[in-house]
Image (cartoon, rainbow, N blue to C red):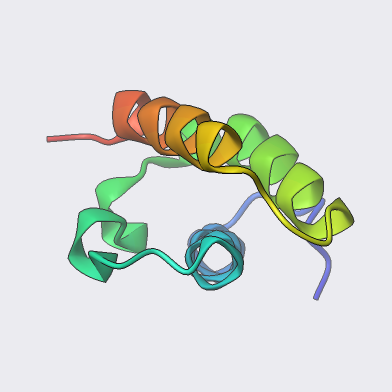
Length: 74
């Protein structure tokens, strides 16, 4: 999968990957359809960062969830 291509499919793949890596308890909070393609680059950055780390601290997870929350569309 070429994540450099901005598409709904790639966006959904990255959001699901972030959710899985962070082991989000309330998975309903982060749904791919809650994000717009205008946030693609930001979500890609988060996806790359999350996947480079072997684990995330609680503070990192809280910060990432807050950022994702800001990107969500109503």
